[in-house]
Image (cartoon, rainbow, N blue to C red):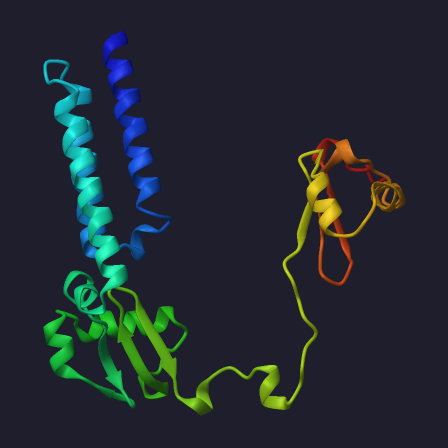
Length: 229
């Protein structure tokens, strides 16, 4: 039993390392060759972990070969546009200037029901409002509405909003992040004073973040929140 556990942990670690080396992507954003590699790696890892009679190397070596092949293809597609088109394919325009391209629909086995469903998911229920709809290599549908149907933005009204940077997390689960506090150009005494105004202290804070305008957001831990009378 111990041998099975050890073998499983080794294969599990190897699979995690392999997935990390392949990069950070959601399943829906994987290229076809990447999805195939993941499926094959999972199958190769399952067999040696279930059957002690199979040598561990029989699972490790194929996984390393697949990982090497995947990284090689990724490197080639990164360096060569022509190779990228062959390996990953090209996006297909399903709607162009408001007109459905039937040939592309048939080529990608994409029916009208699927198209209308994806448009609804993109908050474009009326196909007449679509300028372009592009089926990306990862299977996602990119929708570009017609100019007069797009949401308005401040630039349309000649308004220049103030810069909004990323909020800095200063306290998380009662622990102070000194580096983030230093990056915010605030002092520890300032932080303690702000927390004191809200009737709490560092170790009692679940989350505290500072936005680009200098506003401090604080949420105390549930058991430390003041009780309303």
